[in-house]
Image (cartoon, rainbow, N blue to C red; front, top):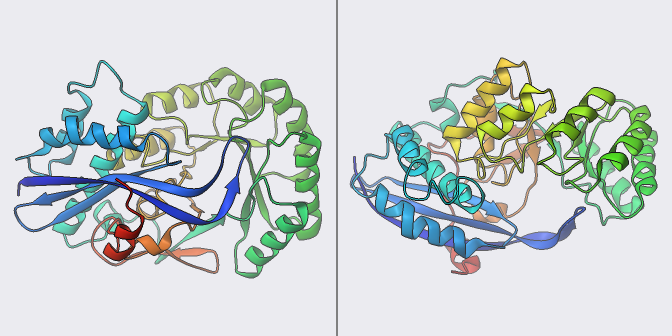
Length: 366
């Protein structure tokens, strides 16, 4: 099999609501990626997820630097191609950032072809690790920072009624005391059986995270995600040591070496790589294996809107659950199906990245 051509794209899909965390407020999600065509008729689709900023630079990276290196290659040689792109002419000017996002899209497209060539869903090709046909999810979409406390309570109540046993609530607003009050209200209303995660999106400095983290301990918070800037490995290590709340990090770490640095000093207790940012499936699996060496769970950040990560969680022994963010589901031919808080694993061959042409054309912006 040979790669004959590639076609890149930028899609800005409406989220369905305006969302906010400690840094961003937005109403659309960006999908930047490519279709990889082969001489045997198989087409692979891969993409990265963005805040609709810098998309044209990611697309240009694929068009100008990565696509020419793919032509004529066998797409099934996906690991060789990963090394080829990583060690190519962009190596010295950038191995992370937008180049990594672009690399992620390419690698996902190649794995999509691998699974289609085997006539298997990707999670089966990679080696199914979970018994049964579903995987546990937790709901992030209920807890955005701009929701009032009343709205937050209503959202969590609906999620619990629909079968979710875990929710994530954003913190990092102007008044940390208000953040704590919201968590206290949720714990009081829903009791100890609800798993509550919080996410600071790098919004607090060390003193704020330590002071208010201590006050959050009494509410049995399951994890504290990105309390500090992602580059502050030592700060996260101290928080992990001093707080009874587990520390979760990963959506802004882009290489296995960055994860290694966190894991070695015990600065992370829930490892959260995003397949659309770390270099695709190839690198994601290495990070998951690294975490497993330290007996750490992997619960990915889903910049792919769960489509690819459902396969990765299902194929990874130390990945206990999947984040639920249901944006842009109309874009996909086979969107993730979640019922009673569990994602039903796909049976269609591939990585679940194929997009509906009518919706794709409607939201395409390049």
